[in-house]
Image 1 (cartoon, one colour):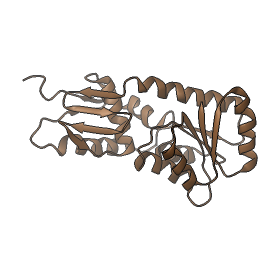
Image 2 (cartoon, one colour):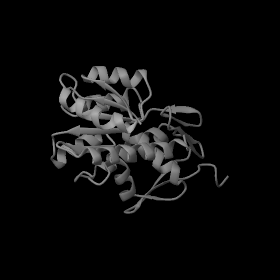
Image 3 (tube, one colour):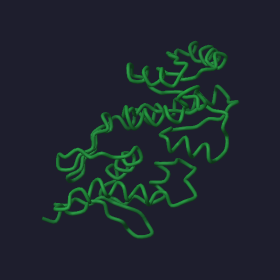
Image 4 (tube, helix red, strand yellow):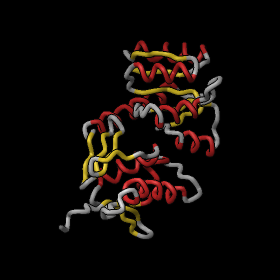
Length: 230
């Protein structure tokens, strides 16, 4: 693995180098959030280990900018001392793929990183997802309907990818919540607001076209091909 470590504690950085390099992994390190963003944009990494409590630009903001501004889809594992459910949910909402609390086991950290890389490699084989008028390039984060570019939120891209992979099969609410928040969904019905934003982008912005995002009340959501019955 090529691992980018965004961490300001030199002891932790040294510990990670001592463990991972003898195993054949290649490591790079940035000590600040701004430096980490620059390194992530300059080179391709398999996975990013991100400290949550960086000076200046903290880990949550780094993760948000990676997803929303750089459209970086490299897996991110947040490594932090913050251990409440709220902290974990906040990290996942910011765009992290996994969350590990300090102190941690290096063996567990390696296993989690390898799992993230496996999932990322598996999904890369289906980089361009298409159904009906919709298409989404998961490598460049470009989504289009009828050739027109769609501007989505980070959660919007994740939901669209899940719906496209399943289409025309229904995707349950639980499946979408797992896609967005892993095993720790929020207590509020946040999914409803994210679905509303996605529907605004792919349907409401095309008033002369048939809606493609369909709600099955109490169960979930699915995509339909607007021209399938023509």
